[in-house]
Length: 624
Picture 1 (tube, helix red, strand yellow):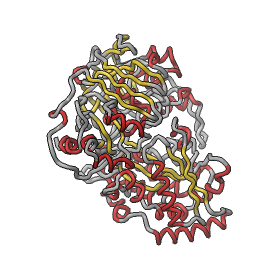
Picture 2 (cartoon, one colour):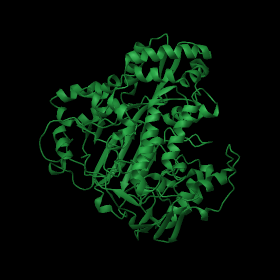
Picture 3 (tube, helix red, strand yellow):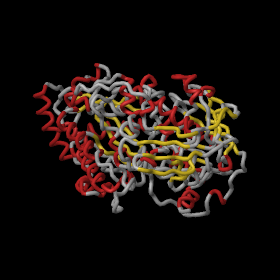
């Protein structure tokens, strides 16, 4: 796909110097307007309903067919889109909408005008519990009364006895003042609010269609309408997706590719490179097992390029505190182990992140290893100091967590404590991977061999297993069907709070269903106090909302993240590596965002070149 996020998000950032050379791709042969872009895809979307999904793979089509209030340019700066201007007074943000924007159907036929009410109706849909919107909690504590409305409908009763009673939706902080004036009232001051508007939770939807379709909204090309640069003209699951330029789009002059055809093939990783050679597709991942041959080949070296570096994504290993996997993998024994800090510390000290990283980037793998969850370069405090350079991270940033001697010491302590607690050895460690994700299987094999080599098979038995190729996140991570697994998170807004989302869970909530840390508190396990302290630190940071206190807010979030890492509740892994690809797109030409990711998925603004971008052109384009 255009963005490597489509491969279950094993994308990443690379800062290696490549060959220098000729000018930008747009100077050296862009195809004429009317060009059609073709590619293969191996992982089918679970839904196109952007109002309920939190999976990036499901957001690719909506990103290209639904516009947002603001968008980003190629440098990441926020610019007007469906909103032409905005203002803030206290907790109230007012947006003036662009007039004459149209909704169209799957044939490109005009249906209605986009109005402020479409944003109101979309939010109401997300806050209706029966639709199970995975991102509804993004609105909690941000939009006034969003949480109260949702939990009131759900009849939520908190553990402290608090009951949420139903309230009228008119009390929620979203309002259509008139057709072209939209207001959001915040629950509190939110420093990152404007940057969050590029994300799916603030996308509009045509109210009458939502009412007509209900839970079946956006399950087919006919059950959604489009206001973006493209409309979906064909959608045959596990066959083909076709997006066609929306000539009625307000910014159609900046949509240069007129048709995007995505054809399903479970063997896309293997087939696409060969089809690139034959000129049959415009994109392919160049996996590590063929990269050297391609770079050395007279007919392929000039076809190899890279993805644009990204600072909006982070990878880390999660320990699952709520195992639901089969009895053969001994979930109760795993519970004892994962709640023992010395066990987690042993696992962290035994993980040499260089080895699996080298599978995707063999030249300089250590460049991409990261000692924090938040990527360096993501954001700075009020004084311009990078978040990862704050004092709380001083010790974490100064040393690699891989330490064989420390691993042995932690192992000895863990075995003593776990034996006393009734655990049996070796601890079975179920580690799953998505078989459609390039190189993930190879990474798991390396991690298994390396960690068992350090800790010994008398202590752990890492069991590598392929998960389903479809709905992997739902079936594996979100359901707790793993013990230890590499996970990823992309920033939803430009603030360090976003990096707490995979781990933080409010009382009574499963959060984003990563590690299920709150299970330790609910079951009063050995790590309950540690998890509670982390949650308390996050709560303290989240309570600092004034822009005037930005430094204090960042320091508080740094304290929370360093605590998470110090107690091995998660293991930082690395930043995104710019994958090697073959593409006819200049990856520096399109929209770019360091949060939200939706702009990064868009084809708008990009020209289809009449040749594949070389590494020389890639480097030249990066310096424009």
